[in-house]
Image (tube, rainbow, N blue to C red; front, side, top):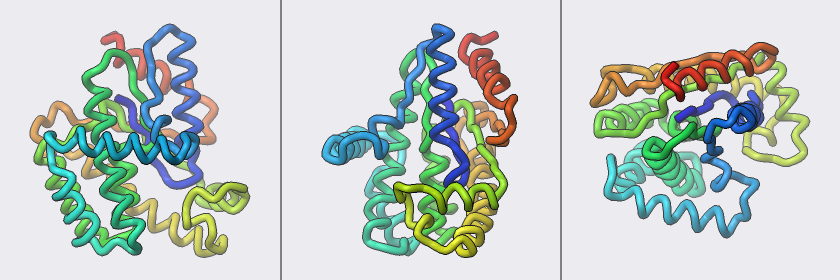
Length: 237
């Protein structure tokens, strides 16, 4: 399981697709797990798939009901939309991770569990969300094998978000100055989310914590290095 995380505009989806393409060309079984739930999928199909994933995840780990209470209510999400979307997306990401871990090959998520915790904390009470995250992990929360954090200079991210023709988040509707301020806070929050994800004391089986890889989206060598690491991990070489 390879999960990408990073700030909006960092290029997570682009880099994930590039990795999937390179692995498939090399003959490695690889799935872009998030695609069926992403914005490119038809809305009706996306909603149906998410609802089914939530139902199927109920017998495992922390229940969706507890997540709804912890993330939607206690963390004081900013809107009704967030109170519904944040715990739902978390459960879906958990389901994707759990299913991917049982299947052969490499499975890539450009919007996985860590990124969903980040989104929940960004729009709600940060401390409450981080507490819920730690409880969830200690109760058997499924984790990826490789956590790839994608970094990029904040001025570049601002330019990318301002120039987007299709608005994918509320952040993009802000002024450049406001976007820069939110990204700066978001970067600090991502540091905390990654630290909890990779903290051996937070999980039941410390050996299962993901390996963290940080890449700069502007670094031309990232693709080869990441590809070689994933191949090495997947083949046991």
